[in-house]
Image (cartoon, rainbow over all chains, first blue to last red; front, side):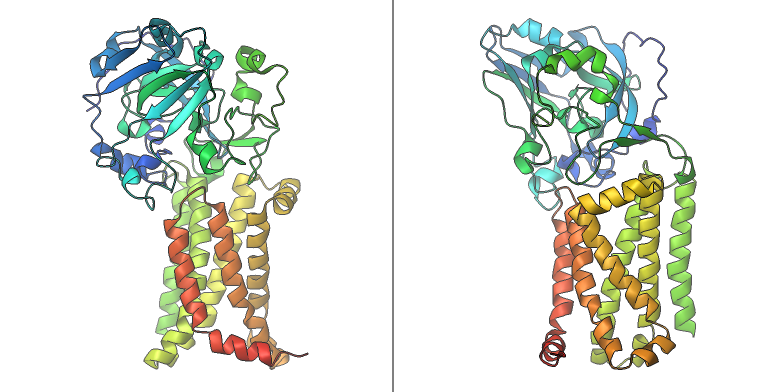
Length: 273
Length: 194
């Protein structure tokens, strides 16, 4: 049973939440298989307590957070975010967590630090996709992701430990995951064990697997197509059958342009996609 | 007769019940993806099944099998139609412009479409009348099913993000079934009109 969390409620939001049941049964978490329903079926094999997240690299104060620390070190708050998958569907999810910048400030990045690299747990004995390339989609493990330091320090960038008021279900990246709402979902790495500050741009899993399809930045952008499909529109995962489908135009930076566009001014976003 | 009824019952029943479930939001979190994939994979499976029939009928001396091939082939075509209609409807909102746009831009889409054009041709030439009219050329036309099986497989393989197991198994199956036709294709190639 999932632990109920103490957190400050989000302000009223005009967004319509994706039903909890859909948020927790429609996941891309190849560590448990490539089908959307695989994580919900197989992620129970993962032990999330005890857990340890290490913050290392170019920081004055390297630190480790244990399972309890994830919930007690910072005040938890609810954030209702749009989530846009690179596969052209979207959800609205009430996350519970804390801003990554609070954690980074505690670790005190050195002036030479420019990027933040993230790593998912590597435990083939509990993650069936890591034990077989036929189950895990033939990508390399552990899953790695990265952000520029200014992106990581942005107040919207969240470390989530829960959704819908409870601790994260394993299939959603328990016990702690990244959520970067203006980027495609694959940037929001799940079940994080390492946060490493570096001077050079870190490698990322999907970029290594298919560099022409998945860039380092992966900012949601209706004008830059995925090579195999258009990103101009998205389908909202919500309740209702195929006669009640909701299509909507994709928003620049997934609707967070006002908050984040300045991070990318003077950058050619078709080149740095 | 009983066999044909059973085939209708299973293949039509399946197609309709999955459509019903999708309309009731009872097909997982994303009924759109689910129904498009159901008809797509269904068409691929039925295509493979039609390729199984003639070697199996010969091996086990079951002519009753051969008599079901046309019906299963037509169901393959019907599932492929539903696959394309659902894609156009649910992914592209029936927009003709986006349909053409996707068709031109994405290799996996036009490869699949090419396969579909073959299926359409075979379905159109499946009635007995067409068979009589085409005479010896009928077999030549229907040998294009082998090309269709490769095109449809490519469409399936390229649409996947990273998965290798399922497309790999289909590739092995299709190659095995095509290898049974090696002599036939060789003969056909040698005797082609020059």
